[in-house]
Amino acid sequence: MGVPRNLRAAALVGTASKSNIAPGDLAQYLTVSAKFAASAAACGTTGYTNVSSAGLTPVTVPKGTSTTLCFETRLASTAPATVKGQSVTITIPLAATQLCGVPSGCA
Image (cartoon, rainbow, N blue to C red):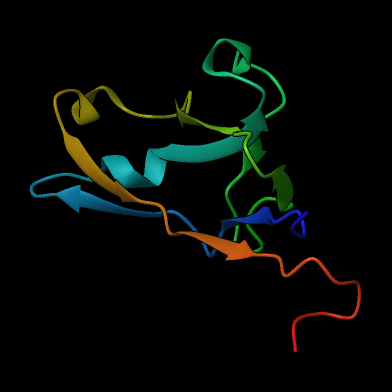
C-alpha cells in the first residue's frame, strides 16, 4: 500500500492585480475576493476574503478529491457613472504544493 499523497492548494500567491484597459479608471473601484468551497453551488455570496498579499489560508486536498476556488469581484458604491462601459484585466496568481506525506517535511 502506497503512502497517501495530498495536495496542498497554496491558494493565492500575492495580490490580484487589476489593470485598466485604456481609457479608464475602473480598477480602483473594484475589490477581488475569494474562498474555498466544496462545490461551485456552495460559493454563494458570503464568506469571501479580500485577496491581499497574504492570499487565502491554504487547504489540503486529499488524493482523489477536489476543492472549488470561488472568486467575487465587487464594484464600490462610490464608483462614478463615468466607469460605465470600461474594462479591466484581473490577474490572480495561483500555486499548488504537493505534500510529501511525512511530518518533518520532504527530504
